[in-house]
Amino acid sequence: MTRLILDISDEAAAKLERAPRPAVVSPSELVGIAVEHYVDLDETHRAEIEAGLAETEAGHFATDAEMKVFFLRAARTGA
Image (cartoon, rainbow, N blue to C red):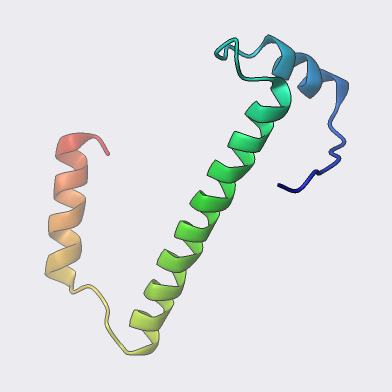
């Protein structure tokens, strides 16, 4: 395990102390969990972006009909 020293604002530290969490999880552990989630999410987003760029570079684009269906579904679902 790597130890990391982190500087955060007093306001963020106070919020961290007040954050609901199981009694067995310290603020330090909570920050570690948050960092892991952030890194995983960032990695996923970057992979999706790279895949999209590769599709674009290969000339694969959504057709007008596909876009119309997409926007109609989004309008119906409120997405």
